[in-house]
Amino acid sequence: MRVIQLGTTAYADSLFRAGELIAAARQGVAFTGAGISAESGIQTYRGQGGLWNTVDPKFASIDYFLSDPAGYWTNAKERGGRLLAARPNLAHEALAELERLGHLAGVVTQNVDGLHELAGTRRLVELHGNGRTVVCLDCGASEPRAGVQARLDREMPPRCRACGGGRLKPAVVFFGEQMPVRAVREAFDLAAACDLMLVVGSSLVVYPAAEVPLAAVEAGAPLIIVNAEPTPYDELAAVVIAGKAGEVLPELKRIAAAA
Ligand code: OAD
Image (cartoon, rainbow, N blue to C red):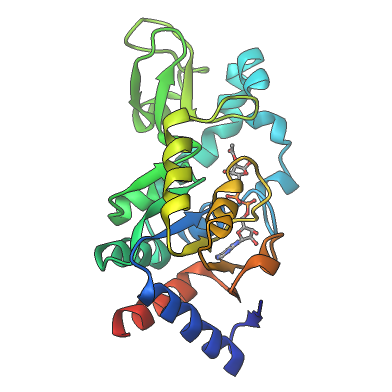
């Protein structure tokens, strides 16, 4: 395992080694977390500047949501606006390109920002749902969050138009809720069959999602970690690159494409 800092000769060696591993992969899987979207203006949960440093994680629990939907939506209003305005960055685009080039079979993400889809990733597994959509807990209808966001100023909490008053909740997995069964199965199937696991921008401390890269390692795939801060899996990795996803991923794509 090598931990390499940006700007050193060792950093260049490390980029090259990771790029070669990606070039050799035919069914690699990228596993992403909030860090990949930091350069798109979306706050991470942990680490420097993370949301949970200043906001109580209870606001993302289903118990809190059900007890006080207006409190939830008031708290989530600003973050929801930022999510809807965010655009994919160079890291999302590099992963989509690596899929097109035949090195990645797909992306498994913990993110709910929808940016991989906007970047053009074709096979995408969203383990924690998608915050660009809102669902009615009472009638099951769904609608784009943009419309709900636009009426928050005059309707708090927002109500379902389809059934005329049902409780609306972002289509994301809250603490205390089950993960989507089909997505979890697909993520572990991809991990078991992959020939490379590329982790980008995740603290790797939230389970069961963090078991996905572990399953790939147990199946024999080499692990690359690109993250701004150390993770508990660094010791398992063939290469660890400490850096910003938006700077590192385009370099890895360039090296892999040229190999
Ligand atoms: P975290 O916020 O836990 O971790 C993000 C990681 O990205 C941190 O280790 C940062 O150091 C790193 N980072 C920050 N900026 C970066 C950049 N520009 N490039 C590369 N790395 C960067 O996010 P996740 O691991 O995704 O769950 O968190 C997992 C889950 O915890 C989330 O899906 C969410 C949260 O509670 C649910 O909502 C269910």
